[in-house]
Length: 358
Image 1 (spheres, helix red, strand yellow):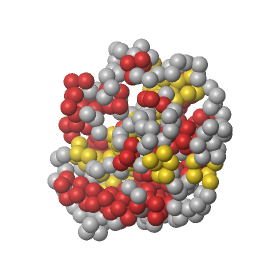
Image 2 (cartoon, rainbow, N blue to C red; image 1 turned 90 degrees about the vertical axis):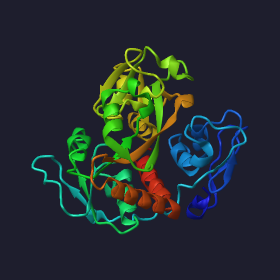
Image 3 (cartoon, rainbow, N blue to C red; image 1 turned 90 degrees about the horizontal axis):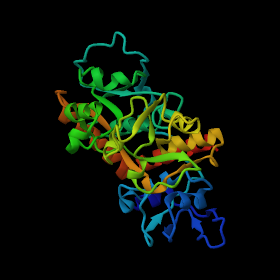
């Protein structure tokens, strides 16, 4: 885990904690978790905002485990710095094309190049207006560029998200689509149709990115510390987003009501407008919208319920090159993580995204 140090280590104090009893948090060094700490409160003292706790989590995921809401007193966490030169992307931007529509797509190619789907409107992860098409688009680009065997590949923006898995992936018009959660396929009887479809039809790559999800509600609500306390609530998820994170903690209809918003960030608006009681949103996305609306005093994140949703690339189980392509993608992901390129890319995208929302 501490290969991150050679990449990030700089000296200097990030931000001193506001309280007299708060322990100083210095970037580029280890911090020992104190009673009452959450990753967000550590990030507030380190960087001046809570949202950057995802950077601390990404740098310490092996030590913290799958739930960033559960850290232990005495844990030693490395605090990466976010100032200084963030570097430039080494990804091959010419591999990305803007297709825009699924009309008149070419038939599955006979060529051996790997055809990858990405989309837009989900900053900072996938978005045409972001550098290199967003974080996940750049990660798959870098992974394939650094994969064993130097494969040929193309990355296409197709902004009809609903068509990505079916028909484009299952009919083999494309090989890979990125940014998908893997349901718990051991509880098939509790899964919605979309989650069952993924279990039955798709294979998943090694993790591309561990996305931290948070539950958000009005600041006047009680603090939720157990998922069972959310029963009876109207919970907002973006259109086309999986309900697998809710299914995994037994939050399914009719125990809850699902409210769909056009985008993940819009779920924050829905809470403020009383169209939903709770928003389940990636922390990075939520923090950007809350800053945009100047709503920090109006919205709270329920720290104890934060958890990691692992995002993958997916391929159809029936794809005749399934094993070959998955092995190639996984080799590239492993190579860029081992070299430090993966974390440098995450750091650059997240720092740029944060700067837009401050």
